[in-house]
Length: 256
Image 1: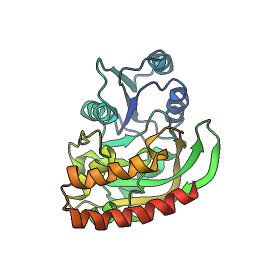
Image 2 (image 1 turned 90 degrees about the horizontal axis):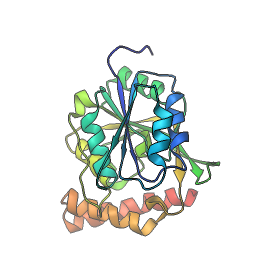
Image 3 (image 1 turned 135 degrees about the horizontal axis):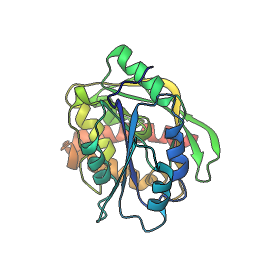
Image 4 (image 1 turned 60 degrees about the horizontal axis):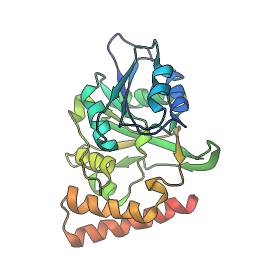
């Protein structure tokens, strides 16, 4: 895929005390076969050496933009600020400890443009906190609409790409006790847009010991709160969706 002079993809990356991993994450973006991107890194008041490392890694590459916040506001707030600063036609999300495979942007853009999809995601592999790649690969559904997403949270944020020309100006809901990225995906699909899965492994998710995804109880609580506080779903319906979510989550976590 050829690049144009206009920025095509804006990569949204929040950082907070990411010194251990950010060099590798930035490196996986630099290695992309598709090169017409910008990476907007929003640092949420890191207290370690994250800022210095980022400045060193992005020096002399105008595709990078670093925004340093004066007050910690959480990852959703950082992502929202990056989204507002984005100039690309597409948004892609990459957290500061995860990785992309080199053809991630190229393959996903081709998939979206060929089919005129507004919202896509892909398969992804799990690696340990130390960076060792495991044999666990999450294979995602071929298609999700609003109601099916309520029952299945299999979309990995590090794999999502959105066409801004179709989804419009989006923002993640700011609810610390809810799943804010999941809330955004639901808000998009609630408008009748559907999400499509690319059956290719394009990203690597780092499973850290103290991450939310490693704490199944907190993750379940955030999903429930998303139903009730963000989507305003009544209790009987929320219980139905939560039961389905729990079954999918058990299958997912049994792999890891």
